[in-house]
Image: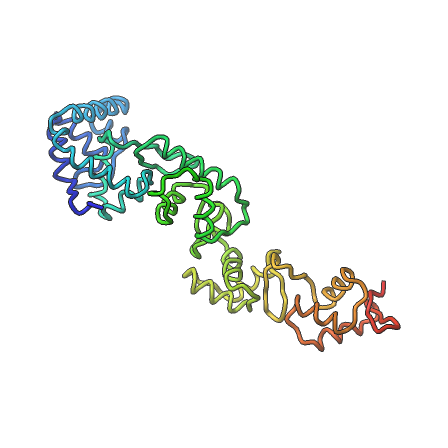
Length: 343
């Protein structure tokens, strides 16, 4: 990308030099082209000059039209071609924020780039809406295809889904089967995914519904769910708290974390202080409850069979299971040495 050759401030200085003084001041204020990089609203500028916001809008539109008709505009053709090439390199459609940051991290420079983008007729923009970020693009058909594919991708995701980024990219490509090969790479796909306000990525690099607590974690129990899921096996509540602090850089008190695990149905106590995810299929309840559930589900079983099945649900000593089996109010042993429920 040729961004090193792009020096926007001298370019905008030459372009706005063709304007009358007040029109030039309005443009500078609206786009943050002066010492103050804060962009002023139409209303704020109107108050400064004692005119209506609609009159400010008219002046702004007049200023942009005047620049586009000027000789100065024609002399800057190279910079517009350069920006067009940048957008093409970024996938032909890119969010405004990502486009600007890819050129410069300096807020003032970004304002000048934005002004040049607004002036240019080689590229177009779609403003931020409920589904997508503010984006710049080169071809209407291309941006429409990307947006439609993102909508279809989102429609197939449930609130609880957590999808590895590689799988998310692959699914997106399936919706973009007619896409040109020049755009079929993961970097561009990730950039397009970021256009959607409905899709989001958590700190662990997993994608899903942007509003889901799995993506936009806020509560301790949400962070706990993510770290246990990432771990892939039961964790002690002290380990969970430590992982939350380490992974998310969020202070997690052990006692608070334990209380959250107890309250939330997403977690199952499977041993002394050990918690698993309910979605893994672990049964809830104390050991005697687990034995009862195993017998209800499987019918009469030997002691060894019961121990084997309960140990898949609980991290306890075998003797604990055997002792619970002696509860005659709950369990009875038949002539074949198999256990059933007493009632």
